[in-house]
Image 1 (cartoon, rainbow, N blue to C red):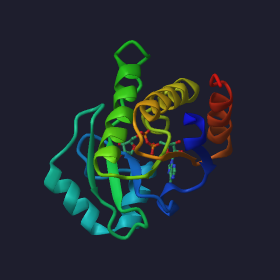
Image 2 (cartoon, rainbow, N blue to C red):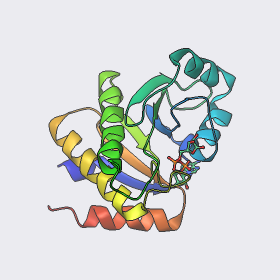
Image 3 (cartoon, rainbow, N blue to C red):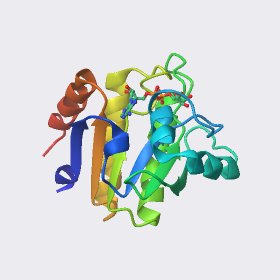
Image 4 (cartoon, protein in one colour):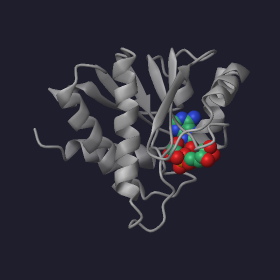
Length: 173
Ligand code: AR6
């Protein structure tokens, strides 16, 4: 059952003891605020060095580095779209950010992956719409792949957690 492989938690993604955490980065990959800033602070300066060597990432794609001082072995850096009203391809780009992150996790044999709510902070993507995309892409991917075994959506606040929990409850059995 795919749903057994999806969890929702409230907390700080940098504290997750999983094989890979996903970062909501920007296309420079050189750090920023929000979850990106928290991950870089917790991982230490080697993470920025590794990102510098990669040299950037287009919106809707993902790149992988080690996690350095984090408990997580890997950080998967993905770039979600900046919300621009909804008719600029934002849905497809956000879906692609989740899908390419999950592909990288699978290809690096990560059994456990944690995602933040990509694009829903500084990038302004409406939370419910983003959550539906996150859940739908993850369910579709897990149905077709044995890895990752589990995906945890790490919600920074209670409102986000409630939106994710209700999206999961609405999934067909
Ligand atoms: N753990 C889990 N979730 C977090 C954490 C944390 N430690 N900190 C914040 N969040 P945002 P975006 C939540 O703005 O919208 C950066 O500057 C936050 O509450 O981090 O994709 C990048 O460099 C929200 O629910 O990412 C980019 O320039 C979610 O993470 C830009 O922001 C995403 O909020 C990306 O914007």
